[in-house]
Amino acid sequence: MESEWGLLLRAANAGDAPAYQRFLVLLTPALRRFVRRALARAAAPEADSEDIVQEILLAVHLKRQTWIDGAPVAPWVFTIARHKVIDFLRRRGRRVHLPLEDFAETLAAESDEPSLIGADIDRHLDGLSTVQRKVVKSIAVTGASIAETAADLTMSQGAVRVALHRGLAALAAKFSKQDD
Image (cartoon, rainbow, N blue to C red; front, top):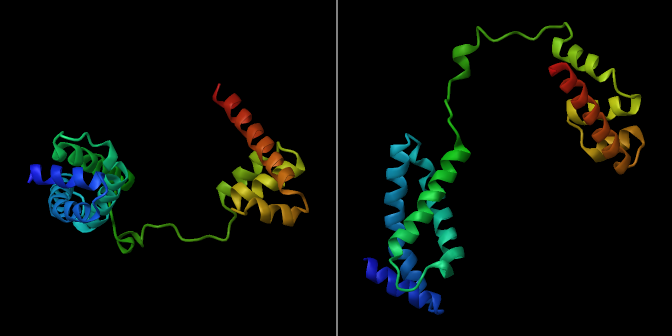
Protein backbone atom coordinates (compact mmCIF):
# COMPACT_ATOMS: atom_id res chain seq x y z
CA MET A 1 0.00 0.00 0.00
CA GLU A 2 2.79 2.41 0.95
CA SER A 3 4.50 2.22 -2.43
CA GLU A 4 1.19 2.71 -4.25
CA TRP A 5 0.43 5.76 -2.11
CA GLY A 6 3.86 7.18 -2.94
CA LEU A 7 3.44 6.60 -6.67
CA LEU A 8 -0.03 8.15 -6.65
CA LEU A 9 1.02 11.16 -4.56
CA ARG A 10 4.06 11.75 -6.79
CA ALA A 11 1.80 11.70 -9.86
CA ALA A 12 -0.78 13.90 -8.11
CA ASN A 13 1.85 16.48 -7.20
CA ALA A 14 2.87 16.47 -10.86
CA GLY A 15 -0.68 17.43 -11.81
CA ASP A 16 -2.35 14.04 -12.41
CA ALA A 17 -5.89 14.60 -11.08
CA PRO A 18 -7.08 10.98 -11.48
CA ALA A 19 -4.02 9.78 -9.54
CA TYR A 20 -4.84 12.25 -6.77
CA GLN A 21 -8.43 11.05 -6.65
CA ARG A 22 -7.25 7.42 -6.45
CA PHE A 23 -4.80 8.40 -3.67
CA LEU A 24 -7.60 9.95 -1.62
CA VAL A 25 -9.91 6.96 -2.23
CA LEU A 26 -7.22 4.57 -0.98
CA LEU A 27 -6.24 6.81 1.93
CA THR A 28 -9.72 7.48 3.34
CA PRO A 29 -10.50 4.02 4.80
CA ALA A 30 -7.11 3.94 6.56
CA LEU A 31 -7.78 7.38 8.02
CA ARG A 32 -11.22 6.30 9.22
CA ARG A 33 -9.70 3.33 11.05
CA PHE A 34 -6.97 5.53 12.54
CA VAL A 35 -9.45 8.16 13.76
CA ARG A 36 -11.86 5.59 15.24
CA ARG A 37 -9.03 3.92 17.17
CA ALA A 38 -7.75 7.30 18.40
CA LEU A 39 -11.21 8.38 19.56
CA ALA A 40 -11.76 5.04 21.29
CA ARG A 41 -8.44 5.43 23.17
CA ALA A 42 -9.50 8.91 24.25
CA ALA A 43 -12.99 7.69 25.26
CA ALA A 44 -14.46 10.24 22.85
CA PRO A 45 -17.67 9.63 20.90
CA GLU A 46 -17.15 8.13 17.48
CA ALA A 47 -19.87 10.36 16.03
CA ASP A 48 -17.31 13.05 15.19
CA SER A 49 -14.93 10.73 13.35
CA GLU A 50 -16.10 11.65 9.85
CA ASP A 51 -15.61 15.36 10.54
CA ILE A 52 -12.06 14.67 11.68
CA VAL A 53 -11.38 12.55 8.59
CA GLN A 54 -12.55 15.44 6.42
CA GLU A 55 -10.25 17.84 8.31
CA ILE A 56 -7.34 15.45 7.75
CA LEU A 57 -8.08 15.12 4.04
CA LEU A 58 -8.25 18.90 3.73
CA ALA A 59 -4.92 19.27 5.55
CA VAL A 60 -3.34 16.61 3.32
CA HIS A 61 -4.64 18.47 0.28
CA LEU A 62 -3.30 21.81 1.48
CA LYS A 63 0.08 20.37 2.51
CA ARG A 64 0.61 17.74 -0.18
CA GLN A 65 3.44 19.74 -1.75
CA THR A 66 5.37 19.44 1.53
CA TRP A 67 5.70 15.67 1.13
CA ILE A 68 9.27 14.85 0.13
CA ASP A 69 9.23 12.79 -3.05
CA GLY A 70 10.60 9.34 -2.31
CA ALA A 71 9.94 9.55 1.43
CA PRO A 72 7.37 7.18 2.94
CA VAL A 73 3.87 8.59 2.65
CA ALA A 74 2.25 6.87 5.65
CA PRO A 75 4.34 8.58 8.38
CA TRP A 76 3.74 11.93 6.73
CA VAL A 77 -0.04 11.37 6.46
CA PHE A 78 -0.48 9.88 9.92
CA THR A 79 1.50 12.70 11.51
CA ILE A 80 -1.00 15.11 10.01
CA ALA A 81 -3.83 12.84 11.15
CA ARG A 82 -2.49 12.59 14.70
CA HIS A 83 -2.28 16.38 14.96
CA LYS A 84 -5.82 16.82 13.64
CA VAL A 85 -7.17 14.32 16.19
CA ILE A 86 -5.30 16.11 18.98
CA ASP A 87 -6.67 19.46 17.78
CA PHE A 88 -10.19 18.02 17.83
CA LEU A 89 -9.80 16.61 21.32
CA ARG A 90 -8.43 19.92 22.61
CA ARG A 91 -11.31 21.86 21.05
CA ARG A 92 -13.80 19.38 22.44
CA GLY A 93 -12.33 19.56 25.92
CA ARG A 94 -13.45 17.36 28.71
CA ARG A 95 -17.24 17.32 28.69
CA VAL A 96 -19.57 15.60 31.04
CA HIS A 97 -23.23 15.52 30.10
CA LEU A 98 -25.67 15.47 33.00
CA PRO A 99 -29.43 15.70 32.52
CA LEU A 100 -30.82 18.93 33.91
CA GLU A 101 -33.83 17.09 35.31
CA ASP A 102 -31.56 15.41 37.87
CA PHE A 103 -30.84 18.80 39.44
CA ALA A 104 -34.20 20.55 39.05
CA GLU A 105 -34.98 20.33 42.76
CA THR A 106 -31.62 21.73 43.86
CA LEU A 107 -31.41 24.62 41.40
CA ALA A 108 -32.19 27.98 42.86
CA ALA A 109 -35.55 29.43 41.97
CA GLU A 110 -35.72 32.90 40.51
CA SER A 111 -36.36 35.53 43.13
CA ASP A 112 -37.88 38.96 42.98
CA GLU A 113 -34.99 40.44 44.96
CA PRO A 114 -32.27 42.20 42.99
CA SER A 115 -29.35 39.91 42.48
CA LEU A 116 -26.23 40.34 44.53
CA ILE A 117 -24.21 40.12 41.37
CA GLY A 118 -26.09 43.04 39.84
CA ALA A 119 -25.59 45.10 42.98
CA ASP A 120 -21.91 44.18 43.03
CA ILE A 121 -21.51 45.23 39.39
CA ASP A 122 -23.21 48.57 40.05
CA ARG A 123 -20.94 49.16 43.05
CA HIS A 124 -17.81 48.59 40.95
CA LEU A 125 -19.08 50.70 38.06
CA ASP A 126 -19.77 53.63 40.39
CA GLY A 127 -16.09 54.57 40.26
CA LEU A 128 -16.31 55.30 36.52
CA SER A 129 -17.40 58.47 34.80
CA THR A 130 -21.05 58.58 33.75
CA VAL A 131 -20.26 57.91 30.08
CA GLN A 132 -17.82 55.10 30.87
CA ARG A 133 -20.33 53.51 33.27
CA LYS A 134 -23.13 53.61 30.67
CA VAL A 135 -20.89 52.21 27.93
CA VAL A 136 -19.36 49.43 30.04
CA LYS A 137 -22.75 48.44 31.41
CA SER A 138 -24.32 48.41 27.95
CA ILE A 139 -21.59 46.36 26.28
CA ALA A 140 -20.06 44.22 29.02
CA VAL A 141 -23.11 43.63 31.20
CA THR A 142 -26.14 43.66 28.90
CA GLY A 143 -24.28 42.40 25.81
CA ALA A 144 -25.12 45.21 23.39
CA SER A 145 -22.85 45.77 20.44
CA ILE A 146 -20.69 48.85 19.85
CA ALA A 147 -23.13 50.03 17.18
CA GLU A 148 -26.19 49.50 19.40
CA THR A 149 -24.55 51.29 22.31
CA ALA A 150 -23.50 54.19 20.08
CA ALA A 151 -27.06 54.55 18.80
CA ASP A 152 -28.59 54.30 22.30
CA LEU A 153 -26.21 56.88 23.79
CA THR A 154 -26.07 59.09 20.65
CA MET A 155 -22.29 58.75 20.42
CA SER A 156 -19.99 57.81 17.59
CA GLN A 157 -18.76 54.22 17.54
CA GLY A 158 -15.21 55.48 17.99
CA ALA A 159 -16.20 57.40 21.12
CA VAL A 160 -17.93 54.27 22.46
CA ARG A 161 -14.77 52.22 21.88
CA VAL A 162 -12.62 54.82 23.65
CA ALA A 163 -15.03 55.04 26.62
CA LEU A 164 -15.19 51.22 26.82
CA HIS A 165 -11.41 50.90 26.72
CA ARG A 166 -10.90 53.59 29.36
CA GLY A 167 -13.65 52.19 31.58
CA LEU A 168 -12.28 48.65 31.43
CA ALA A 169 -8.75 49.94 32.06
CA ALA A 170 -10.00 51.84 35.13
CA LEU A 171 -11.77 48.70 36.42
CA ALA A 172 -8.64 46.62 35.83
CA ALA A 173 -6.54 49.13 37.73
CA LYS A 174 -9.06 49.14 40.56
CA PHE A 175 -9.00 45.34 40.83
CA SER A 176 -5.22 45.13 40.60
CA LYS A 177 -4.99 47.53 43.56
CA GLN A 178 -7.38 45.30 45.54
CA ASP A 179 -5.15 42.27 44.85
CA ASP A 180 -2.06 44.00 46.22
